[in-house]
Image (tube, one colour):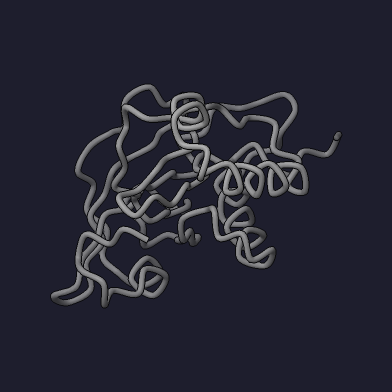
Length: 168
C-alpha cells in the first residue's frame, strides 16, 4: 500500500480521525470527487473524498453511493483480496458533509487494465481476484481505468460506488 506519509502510517485510523483539507476536484468524475490531505498531528496522507451531497441521482441506485464505496472495501478485506484501498465513511465533520474517504493510490496513471494485462502476465492472478470481487459485489461499473498499479506492483480496484446493485 503506497503511503505518502511513510510506511508507519496506518491509513484507516488516519482516515477516520484526521482533519480533511480539500486540495482540488478530480477531473473527469461524474460526481463530486476531491483530492484531499488528511492530517492527525504530524501524520498526514492523501485521500479521495466523495461527499454524498455531490452525487448525481441514478434511476437504478438509491442515494448514498459513498456507502457502497465503504462496503466494497469491507468486502475486499473480508474476502482477503485486499484490492480496494482503505475506505471509511465520514460524517458531518467532513468539509462538504457525510461521504467516503479512500486512501489515495500513488499510481502510474498511464497504465490501466488493458495495458497491464497485455504487458504484465504476472498480474493476471490479481486481475482474476478483482473479477471474483466484482462478481460477488455485483459491480456494474468496472472500467479499465479503475484498475491502478502502485509502485510495488499491486493492483487496486477503485471507484466502487456502483456495487451491490439490487438486480444481478
